[in-house]
Length: 359
Ligand code: IPM
Ligand code: MN
Image 1 (tube, protein in one colour):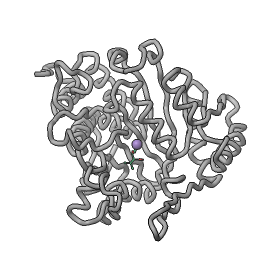
Image 2 (image 1 turned 90 degrees about the vertical axis):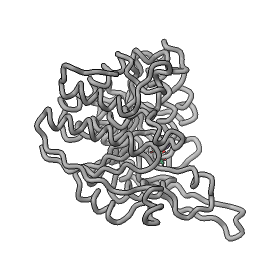
Image 3 (image 1 turned 180 degrees about the horizontal axis):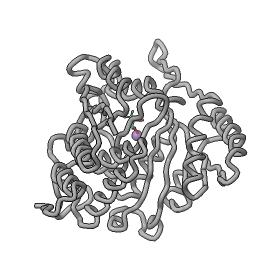
Image 4 (image 1 turned 180 degrees about the vertical axis):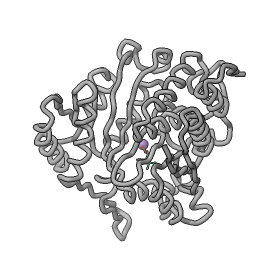
């Protein structure tokens, strides 16, 4: 298969983890005889530094004509600590999501038996937990009107959802549930928010098209607690933009490290694949960042084009590396490997090289 992949490394650890994901995709292309063409572009704080624009036109154009986008990470502390900054790295990612119509963000959470002890949660509670979060990605409070009063004493963020925005992501979540354990949990705050009541009504109506899927509802505060107390009850979680952002970081605790969690954002044009973690600026350039989330995002990219065997080759290699303790320091404190070494090791496993060395 021929694919044009836009690569947006972004900020902090973004470039080093993305490099490993590209390495692994190249090794998949070699082994399975595909033609993947990679083209890099600027985004985020890096793009602001060079062009004073977190999403330069050239980047957006490249993403629009690409088959898929591989995204690293975004964000820089100099903006986090400056609430008055008008141009911010995150705007690059948010605009890209909107422009590409990426309305569904898919975040799978699984456990690795070797890492069960890594989680601060009790092993018996998380062992076997396996869920996927469908987060609405181009609506809600993230994209509503925002303003600050003239005197600076009050600020407003408006949350809006339409039936069609809810339906399109809900369809995908129901279809995912049909292929899994056939349970869908809608997380909302319908006891307080009008938008949440619209979510409930719309999703309940849609459920008639999916009679094999069991639909449940949870308020987001309760869901946050259930995620820790009994994560195994979840199969597919469907939720709005901000609740999904918060719950998916929380859910990463189950996997043992946020450095393992991948995501796919799908919608109207090219799909985008990115780790759920941020730019981790403290670690940038040190070779300690975990590239697995970026690499598993590359596997989701392959899934998106129905290259299932190829995606599974990546996942098997990742599973084996974790089994063998070939991990970065977030997972293996005592005997850890660098970002690049992990990429090389997975590359070696995928290319089926008999002489893999981990030293
Ligand atoms: C994420 C991130 C983004 C979000 C930020 C960087 C804008 O936290 O992808 O989860 O809030 O959506
Ligand atoms: Mn987030």
